[in-house]
Image (cartoon, rainbow, N blue to C red; front, side, top):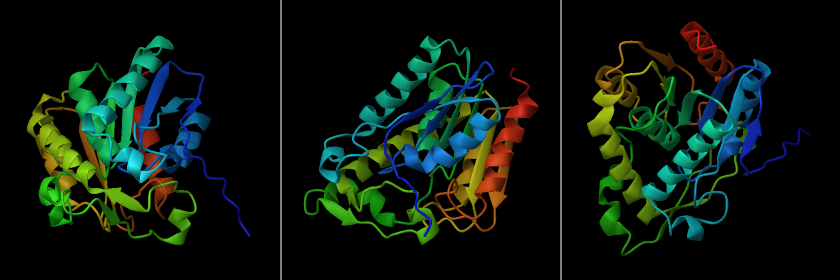
Length: 249
């Protein structure tokens, strides 16, 4: 039997070039969903740092006490950490909500590039917009499990705090309004079988970012957690190739 040791903790792997990659996990997730990507990029010389966002990796009850401002603060602390470590060139690579936070970082802080995977603009669950009211009558929503080959790597909550869904909705709308402020190289990645995010979200982001250097890639057999799905090796390779083309080092 294959045994995968799952760990929700942040990870920091120092590479041998001058580029720091900030890997940001998704809503209710942990850095575990970015671990395979982090190891791959580290093997290619990059420094990678994946922080644990506030409220994540503990209990749904703990997360329910947090909001998008707390998650954003976690990202800025992580960015500052890489700066303090001496990395002048930083690239943010985010999955799902982490992709939205990466896009926000791209217009709030000096970055060399941004990669957004499965970043939501439009979501399948139409109740998201009602979460600010639903939270008063229902506290948590059970989550549907992923495929076994994805679940074996995840350290995620089995319930979603509904109050946090409303806060995520605010974050998405904020970033959507500000996409034109993003002027750095951007790589937008999206799975065609995403069960959470409408794949048209990627097209919207690509069309509305202000970047003159931008790319979009589609993955026909990938669901929402692209970093752990069947096409993950292609996803990893495409990110590496995008970074190499920028000639940042």
